[in-house]
Length: 300
Image (tube, rainbow, N blue to C red; front, top):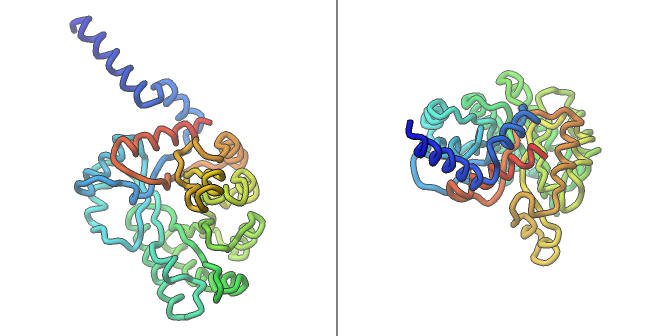
C-alpha cells in the first residue's frame, strides 16, 4: 500500500474519532470499566425519515445497543422483528403506553380494567420482541384520587398481571415520575416488597429525581430492585427561572446531576444493565452526541 495514502487514511480516522469527542482508547477504557452497562434510547427520540430498518441501522451506527418501544403502538410487529434481526439492535424493553390515560388508580373500575389490559398487552409484546421489562407508571395522585387509594388500587391491579409476568418471563418495572406518588426511596422499597414477587422492580429515572432529591441516595436504598435506568438531565436553575419542565431542557452533563456520584452508587449496589436516554431527540448527529455523552457517564 502507498505509505502516503495509508498515512492520510490514518490521520483521517483519527480526526473522525476526535470529532466524535472520544478517542478509541477512551471508548475501549469505558467498555472495560463497566462492561455490563448497555446503552439504549426511547424510540420516540428518532426524528428521521425512512423505514424502521433504516432507523434501526442508523441507531447502531451512531452507537446504541438497544431501543425502548411503546406498547401498544402503531408499529408493525413483523417489521420490528425483521429490523431487529437484520441490525442486531436489541429491544431491551417496552413502555406501557396507556398508563397515563387509563391509570391503575382511577376511581372507575372500567378505566382500571382497560389499564390492566394495556399492561398485559405490553407484557406479551415485550416477550415477542425479546425484551426483559415493561415500564409502568403505577398510579397518579390527584384531587379525586387520594394517595391511599392510589396505593391500594394500583397494587391490586398489578397483582392481577403478575402471573402473566411470571409466565412470560418479563418483569414489571415501576418508574418514578411526577405523579405525586411514591415520593421517597423508603416508600418505593415498601411498595415493591409488598408484592412479594421477583417479577416487579424499579425503572429508575435519574432526571426525574433531581428536582426533589439526589439520585445516588435512591440508588443505594433501592439497590437490587433497580431493573433499568432512564438517563436524562435536569437543571434546577432553569426550573426556578423558566418553570418546572424547563429543567429538562439541558444536555447530559450540563445540568445538576452528579454523574460520577450516580455511577459510584450504581457500582456499590452492583447494577449492570440497560440505561436508556430520554431526551429531546433529532437526527443522526444529535443522537450520536447523546450516545457519546452517555459513554462519558458510563465511564465516570
